[in-house]
Length: 280
Image (cartoon, rainbow, N blue to C red; front, side, top):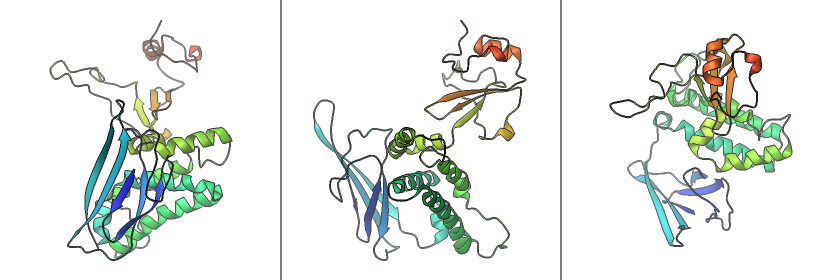
């Protein structure tokens, strides 16, 4: 794979699971829809706002039938000089994934405490840049966060609590496994790994997760915030990060719910290592 830029731009560094044979070429064993590579692009001179900045990503690969093909993706970006436009149209998911990859890649050359501190500083710098350039007239004591980056502090904390950057109770093998896993995951998988989906199973509607008779579409339940404050002691919740599925069962859960989901009427009869929720 190779990324090309128009004049005034250059790729300074790549992040991901690959072999960098040359400064401009990346070798990948498998590159499918569930993989992603992050690139740090810098501008070497002032760009003209009346023109576009162009990027091209070309991948030379071999199909299952043995055919050699080239797939190219072209992108034209509008040049902006106002910081407000940058924050307004920024993609927080891409920023979070890039911060995660940058921090994990730094583990090979820096101490973990320095990496965690640098990640926090980068999050603060982004929010401080918005205050200075877009909301300088507001009160200094007022918390100002851009609309597109409201959840950036939350995801920054989630990165520091991930297995590669977690300081304690993580073996070297587990840490190394998640380093390579996160470096190769797609944007959607990375976001869900950092902030898993949380569903409440005890108050679902009758037509939830069932196909509609007329359209055939399936109505999925709405997601919750990943916080204990929003959970109830009589509820049953499902947590999914695309690697593990965990059921959280409250101590005062209804025996009818236990019977419907797990086939038991007592919470003490639940198997903590259960792999199926269908009653025998």
